[in-house]
Length: 132
Length: 330
Image (cartoon, rainbow over all chains, first blue to last red; front, side):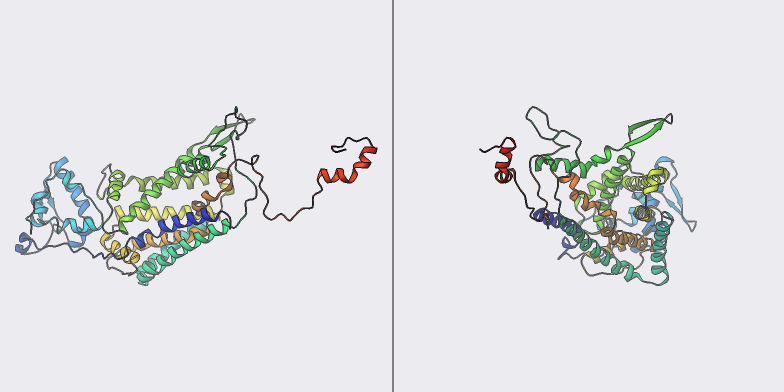
């Protein structure tokens, strides 16, 4: 082999990059996030249901929120009619956060896990939660 | 044939993953076994290829140059084009690896008025190449969020810049679009330019189709078909912490994406994609242009019997004197 030193150096760099996900996680335990739904408002609900089905909300909530923003802020339409024909007031702070008042235990759980930083709170005021 | 074969090969791979996951429930095979095998093949394969290259002797300085070599002190040397020290070589390699300097020099010959051959600068290949490689790098780095918990803060910074147009939700990442556009350009270029089409082989089209497939499934998954990202991260974190799990509810589109990526990794060491390592080992780029300063000895030369002039004169001095040929020693 020629230029052994340089070759070994290059291979070590390559292996360090390629196996980064493996060695950087040694000894770390990561648990799946469990968003909590036990806020006082939700517990008092007769039918524990969001504006759409759970499956829909899980994958489409960001799109729905985006449409809500456009509808309320840009077009001035403040009423949302869901797939069952029920009407909801379009408002993040008065509709969504009314039930899901536990941002840290609900929104942030999955968002932090998936490293998502939505820019909701650059305009809206972040809810002040009681320190538990 | 050279285009259709790799095209249908990629289609087949997609179908294989769809049928395997949806039809045959082989989640463990496509989610765990194949990715592990692919990463293993990738790392071992790349090391093997590099070691094999390192075994080839480079007996001569074959650096390609287009600048003045180091010579007399009053002639200015072109240090980057014709490096004479390690530092210059590092400068030249850095420009090559980071900025694709030799592609920047790409020129195109054209026949004007059917008789005059005119050469002009052609930067499109360089532009598409550099856009493609850097977006691919950023896309790859963005995926670290699936392999680290908690996600390092520099990734948030990267995502902020990448998605700063704030189009839609989830935010549109520019690099995804640029990657797909650039790789499509590189493919169309092969089809459109007759000379390039003539020299293009299946091995050139296959990685292009594969990367188009990977980018398309990734974009579909993020913006259109959607998948359970928390489930995906459970799976990827399971893989890297060597305790694989198959979470429920992760759609087939994810397995297609993962399978295509695995194929890319596994195919890497056997293909032209090895230019990732090869660029550092190209003798035309990484050698110093000092062929007149140092003599390079061919390592496999056998000892040659030489007859020096001194020995020659010693042998024939008398005869040379008789023929009145001048000699060095009397």
